[in-house]
Amino acid sequence: MAAAGAASAPRRVRPAQTPTVVVASAAPAPVVALPPFWAKAKRHLRDADPTLAVIIAQHPRVKLVSRGDGFTTLARSIVGQQISVKAADSVWNRLRERCPDISPQGLLRRRVTTLRACGLSERKAEYLRDLARHFADGHIDLAHLAGQSDADIIARLTDIRGIGRWTAEMFLIFNLLRPDVFPVDDVGLLKAISRHYLDGEPTAGLLRGAGREKVLQMGEVWAPYRSVATWYLWRSLDPVPVEY
Image (tube, rainbow, N blue to C red; front, side, top):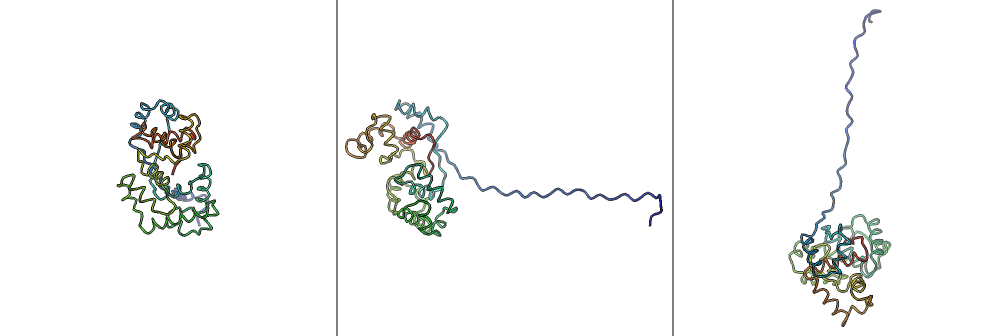
């Protein structure tokens, strides 16, 4: 026992420990590719077409981008077949909520009834699963496709159930960033052409005969950057870029 009045020994104070902070690694951001031809295409289209020059000037800060995921591009294109962009976005968002893993293996684990509950028709649900099977079993090789011509890619993809020419063209534009694709069956493109060039002519008449020939002749003016012309004409109807 220490004597009364004696100085007590100093207490040893343990240094405060810095708490360990565990930082969760962020999920890798999707690869976003920009078309290397974009600036050149804009100059060409502005010089070739005064109407398109005005549209381009109205949308200075947006451009086509590729997310790099070929399966997602094709799946979103199937979802968007024959419905409005707004409706397609709604269905796609519900699909992502119910099926967070939108991959070939992820979709193959889902029943058709689950996919239909997201707003898909039975046929589109079957198309998505068939697309997933083609990817899962290796029948679709994206690296091989990327080295082929537009025409060969369209021919290969349209062999898959549920993928027609329009869907293959969306893949060329939005995934492979091909510069000279002209999807003449796209309703949005025809609406824009009708509004800006044909005094509101009904789009139904632009799908065949003399109307189709007029559309094709316009496309010749925009070559070899018809993908870019199409993209800006879409923007003239909806300033928010569509992504596939």
